[in-house]
Image (cartoon, rainbow, N blue to C red):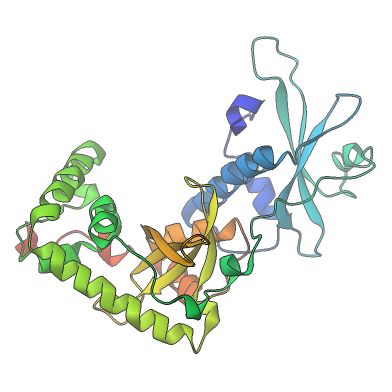
Length: 306
C-alpha cells in the first residue's frame, strides 16, 4: 500500500519541513526533493516489512522514519483515524520523538515502538567482493535504457553528432521524452554504441582497480523497482570527476555482480540515503556541487549541438 492510499496527508509535502527541522542536519537536495522521495520509499518499505504499528485501541498508528534527531533520538511518523468516511482510513498528524511534546504522548502509549526497516542482509550488499571479478553487464541494454542518465556530450561525441539530445528546459518535458525514446532507438543500431561501451568498460575497470585500495567507493543503495540492495560504483567516463554511477546487484546463483542500472549523481545519493546517510566522498561532493549549479549532462547545449 502506498502512502496516499493509506492516509490523507494535508498540504503534502509541507509536513516534511517539520521532519527536516527535527532531524539531524544533512543534504536533501533542492527544495528538499530528496527528502520527499526518501519518505515515500521508506513508507513503502515499512509496509512491505510489516513495520507499521497500530495501537491496540485503534486510535493511532506509527512507524520509524529511519531518521534521528541531533541528539540521536528516534523520529516517528504518527497517524490517527480519519474522521471522514469518504477518505483514507488514516490521517497524518506529524512527526515526533518519544519524549516530544504533544505527539510524544501518543508514542508513550506503546509498549514497544517499531524499528527501522532493515535493508542489508548479507555482506556482498554492503561491500564489493573483489574476488567476484568484473560485474556481468549488458552494456548495450544499460546504455539504451538510460539515455537520459548519460551526459549528453558523451553521446554526441560517440555518435559524431548523429544523435543530438536537446536540453529539457528548451523543449519541454513531452518533447524531451520523445527525443529520448528516439535517441535510444537510434543508438542501438549506431556504431557509436560500440564507442560508448568501450568508454564505460574502461571506466569500470579503473573503478575496480581503485576498489582494491578503497572499499568505501562502493555505496549500498536501494533499487526500488527490484526491491533489492544494489551497490553504486562511481564511473569517471572520459573525465576526471565522477559523472555516472553503475548500480550492480549480487547474484548468489552466478557468484558475481550483475549490472542493474545507470544512475545520475542525485539518483545515486537519493537511493543510498534510504539505507544510510552517504559518506563516500565522490557521492557527497558531487551532490554538493550539483546543488549549486546544473550538471554537465543537463546544461543547455552549445551552439554547435543545435
